[in-house]
Image: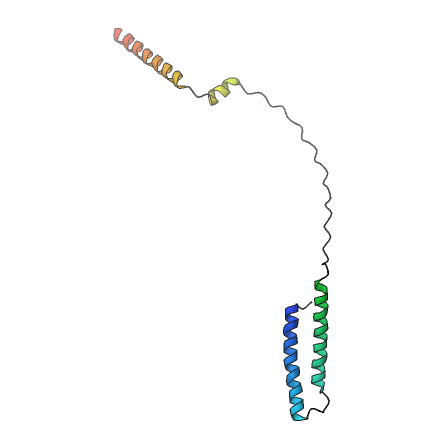
Length: 128
């Protein structure tokens, strides 16, 4: 798993602190002319590997990234058209009855006719 660059810098810093402590403890206890200890050698080797990894990452920054190839879409075969069924024409009366809204003039004439019919019906019943 690749290590992030920020993590490498942090690891380098921690390695440098441990290396410095190892070197200072060797110098204080044995003197500066003594060869480095095994721990110090391991820390130096780790530091060298970390610096190489950081340099490789810095070199890869300027290069273009590899892009994934776009998947090729396979065209689907066209669907067969559905046969159209001829519909029976609706009756015009049903259309007029449902969709027809009486105008104001038609309403007034119908009301007048109803009033006249009521008057005639009342006169007939009074005569009998």
